[in-house]
Image 1 (cartoon, helix red, strand yellow):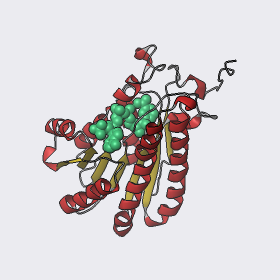
Image 2 (cartoon, helix red, strand yellow; image 1 turned 180 degrees about the horizontal axis):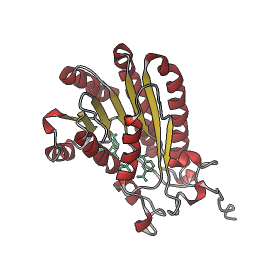
Image 3 (cartoon, protein in one colour; image 1 turned 30 degrees about the vertical axis):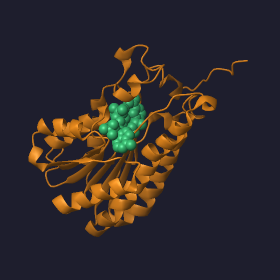
Length: 255
Ligand SMILES: NC(=O)c1ccc[n+]([C@@H]2O[C@H](COP(=O)([O-])OP(=O)(O)OC[C@H]3O[C@@H](n4cnc5c(N)ncnc54)[C@H](OP(=O)(O)O)[C@@H]3O)[C@@H](O)[C@H]2O)c1
């Protein structure tokens, strides 16, 4: 098991399916944790069952709000004095033909899935730079490997593609300061997020479990020295949604 006893880690989306799985494993590895999400009650219940609960801080945070993100960073420094790992995991989905895309969803997906990742990275990098080390992990999406982006998912996917590009650029800029950057590309995973989608749970037995994503995150965090796993895809080819990834074939337009 990876030893993270001396590490301080912020996790956004900690109350979600993938988030809760990551928190359990990070806690077992001994990390001090700052859990951020809007549903603080869910975070507190999660914390209560963790092995090192005295080393866990739960913060109510709407990641679409800059003040809330600044508060997460400030509270982390106040309590633990440093930030070793940032796991950006908060996310929302919106599955619609573009012409029917709810207008408010465009803003929600942009701010949750892209803005919060970039802003929080910006808010932690100077602390990491001062420390001479750090690791930023973005939970991106296997959909970035589908080109053109999947039908009914182009807002979500195009923002994940932008996030992928951002992380690659961030890696270039930050490596000289000892800061690592990793993008995780999950395939379709059994969480409340996929439960809301229409066409991915045809046979829910084929969905991946969140622990598969956590395994990959822990692999990234276990790499020492100058090894930087830049992009890790965990794809389940059996699910309908990820089937188009390899090979990709979309239906012809409906006349
Ligand atoms: N599940 C999949 O198949 C899959 C595949 C590819 C990529 N992903 C990505 O994996 C990440 C986690 O997804 P998941 O499947 O675990 O989803 P989930 O179970 O629905 O969890 C979503 C998490 O995001 C948080 N969140 C959403 N909006 C927020 C906001 N405005 N402020 C703060 N937190 C917010 C939620 O917390 P609160 O509601 O408590 O605020 C929750 O913790 C997302 O980035 C998603 O795009 C998932």
